[in-house]
Length: 404
Image (tube, rainbow, N blue to C red; front, side, top):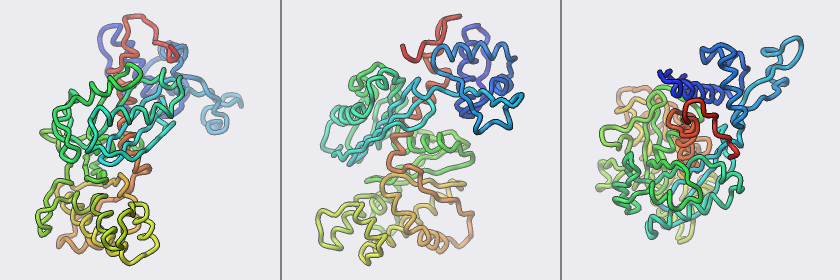
C-alpha cells in the first residue's frame, strides 16, 4: 500500500496513477502536509496541488487542523500546520465471513476503521449457499445507515473453502459447498451494485491482520473455529502456493491420533464435545469452557492442557517447514491461547532436539471478526489501487464525487 505506483504513458494513465498514489500515501500516513505529500509523490507543489484539489472537490480528501499533534513539526510563524487526511465517510466497505456455525460481518470506512460489526449463530451445513449469503448481507445491512449503503464501494465474502480467482467455490469439505459461484450469489444478494471479491476465510484473516500491522518477513496465520484454516504472508504478500491451498495446516494428519487431522484435535467442536462429556452437561458452550479454564476448574484445565500439546505439535511442524517470524492466531478458539501460552511453549521446547528459532505467537487484536475485517480490507485495497473504477475515467474527467 505504501509504494508509489508506476507512471504510465497516456494522460489518462498518468492522472489515474497520480490520484491513486496520492490516496495511498495519505492513507498510509493518516495525515500529512501538502509539502510532504508533494515530496513523497516526487511532484512539484503545483502538480500535487491539482491532484489534491480534485480529490478535495470529490469529497475524498479534506484539510484538518493538526495543531495539537503536529505543531512543532509543521507550524509556520507560530501557526498550526494544515494537514491533509482522508474523509472517512467518503466510502464504506463491507466484509462478511460465513463460518460453519456462525456468520460475522463488519463495515470499514475509507480510513479502514471499523464502523460496525455483527455476529450471529448460523448452521451453514444445513443451509443453502444463497440463504447463508442473504443472512450475512441482512445482518450487516441492518446495522448500516442508508447513506453508508449508498456510499458502499465493495463487498468482500470469506468462507472456509477453496475459491478460484473467478469467485467459484471448488471445494468446501466442512460446509459441503462445491462448484458454486459465491461472487454471483453475493452480487444478487447485496442491495447495491458494487465490486465483489471472495476469499478463503484464513487468507482473508491474514489480509486483515497484515492490513492493520503492515508486517514484513514470514507470518503464519491460523484461524481456529470448527475447522482450522491457515494463511501465509511473506513480506506483506499472500502466498497461495501452486494450487491456492498453501497454509492448510488443519488438514494435516497427526501421527498416533487414529487418523485424525489437526482441526479435529484443536478446533472448536472437539473442545466443546470433550467438555460436555467431562462435566455431563449437554448445552455448555465455548464461552463457559473458557471461563472455567480461567477459573482453573480441573476438567476444563485438563482439556486445555491436551489442546496446548496438540497446538504445540502443529506449530512445531509449521515452524520447521516455514520458519516464520510470527504466528498470529484468530477465530473464537484463539481466546484459549493466552491462558495456556506457557504450556504451549513448554511442549514446543520438549518437542525438538535441535533448538530451532521460536517465532512470536500472538492473538489477533479482534480475533472473532478478523476474517470479516479482512474481507472488507480486500475491497478497500482495491479501491485505493489502479483496479478502482472510481478514478479511471476518461482523460480530463473529474473524480466522481463521493456523495454522488
